[in-house]
Image 1 (cartoon, rainbow, N blue to C red):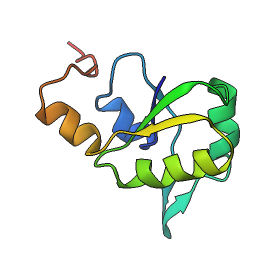
Image 2: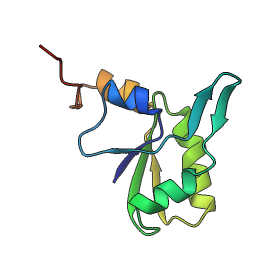
Image 3: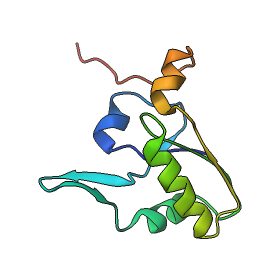
Amino acid sequence: MATSVRTHEEFDKGHLENSIVVPYLFITPQGREKNPQFLEQVLSACKMEDNIIVGCRSGVRSLEASAELLNAGFKSIKNMEGGYIAWVANGFSVKQPQESV
């Protein structure tokens, strides 16, 4: 299961096919704040034994989120090094938003 830990706004601009979004951080007037329901939200979409690929824009947030998931007892977590930027730069397919006509 591909899981994006970017914000919903970032995810809506483009993402991997069949991926889900569970933000690790929220952007607030005070800056970035950790999503207090992150683990619960991942658990509502994934099982502890699922193979989960965690990605973000560049790989920093996903590395932190991956460590948190492993510490919580998830069994098979892989960080997508380089994130969405590297995925696109390597020419892999992405789901882009539909343009309105």
